[in-house]
Length: 81
Image (cartoon, rainbow, N blue to C red; front, side, top):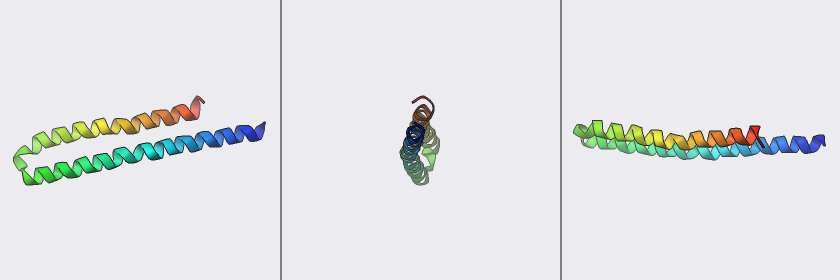
């Protein structure tokens, strides 16, 4: 019985780690891409910098929710299953 419990705990930890590993890569790549393109746009058209910055911050906030959702799922895997 102790071996089965240890395997279950290891599976939970592995699942939560994969959830966060995969769930954190997407927002990081997306936000880096958005910021890079926004800076490129600001360099090309400085008069549009305010509008680009506002849209970039809004997009990064929406993208970050994916990472927060994966953190929530990781906690659910660890503490409820």
